Image: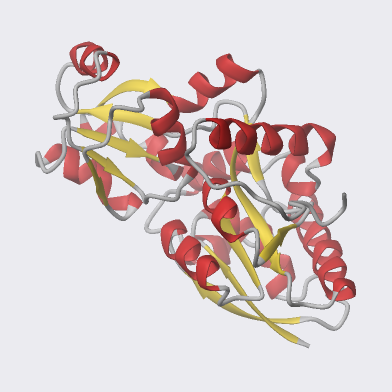
Length: 283
């Protein structure tokens, strides 16, 4: 059985999916056609129900829960992994303007439906002057003055300082202090149109793939590097260490609690619509 699958070319995703798509593990008869896209493109595909399996932002999942169900394996949750607001100028001055509700500041964001933008909306609800950019272009947009502030995700956490940029606030840290929970960034979902036994099969195979990656961390090195945009091996594995952890093997009760809290908070703030479907495959 061949299934379509979408995930980003970022090291955390290629690390997780390497064993699955290259049949280094028992895939229980499943084969995969892979689509590599940035997170906001994946979110948009999820809204249209295009793929059998896809990575998406947890924020976007609220808008696609009628089409997809969340798998236990493959998620990116964690502490110290959140998106950051960065700038070229004086970080303290810009932070004061944000806290004062200044609506003139132009902020480059990696997509309307990213969890990063959800956290920005939660922390600074008046910060509405936003420009959507591909995540990898946000640092340059700050440097050349197209935006006043950049909302960065992924490996840009490790590169912004090298470009002379400054941190205004770590929004993941903001969430952790507010809730005490890990921040849910992205998850892996299966199309609800697939038979239930196939959904469970995908869940098992994906968990096996993550476990293989942890047991053999260098197995997918060439594959990961081929999609890593000239990243050094050190930065690639820093990225993986940041986003792939126990929650990627299995959300467990702690991970599910964090996801539910994210949804409840977003619903209370009217950032997402209400969701009537069960979120989790195993619930």
